[in-house]
Image (cartoon, rainbow, N blue to C red; front, side, top):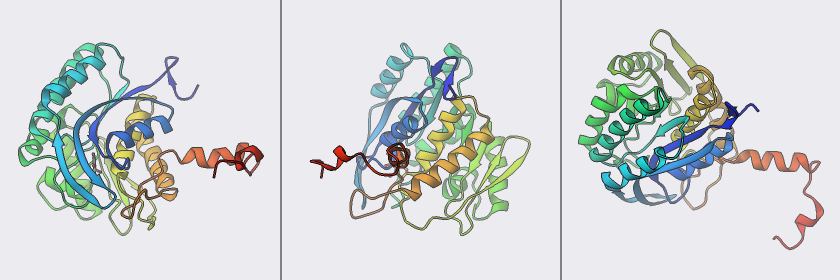
Length: 291
Ligand code: PXL
């Protein structure tokens, strides 16, 4: 089976915050892992209070709770990849750094994707200044791929990142700091393009702009897909290309659950596959009683 590794479905750990709207964070990550036929497990770093119109509050969980969750998972489960999103506090950054050290001692090299979440779209900080510095100094060098957007890349490298040339310089700098690979995502550019640097070569991965606004949490969906694809044995380049294609489709089929910003439909394949199996229309019995 294409999605199996050594006869097993890849188990992917999402370390991320909780977004009650389901568009971003750990709920989105678990949907994304399921969409790629992986098996998702999760450790929550922070609870956010938010709806589709904005973030109202952020509460990081204690480092102790996060560390115990990570220990409980790894004493029982063999992980094929780890995706790290919002961390919420400097303490949680330290816990994840220690966890990754123990993980590689115990299980050998496991692909790790870091989505360095800095601010929500509304500008609310998802990690403090100290946490950000800790992430840059200690977490970056332990990851297989880091996937910052333009703003996050600029904050990590210390110079403006607004065009493809600067994205290339930033990706190289992120690898110089210690990430094995860097993908600077340019979804906000007029001509959207991601730039990948693998330590040797730069690659431009062009995309298409969809202006339907269903973009809340697209960074989470992208980075998680990269993690699942790496777990399933794809190269970094293949994983990035497959992740871009998935996120495009998910945005295209996106929706809003409230009056504000829409989100990708992580499980869009359920909608596009079901009618096809039913010969283009829903079975008759589905029409009765359900609406
Ligand atoms: O998209 C960044 C992000 C990540 N994680 C959580 C979030 C958000 C944005 O709101 O809420 C939990």
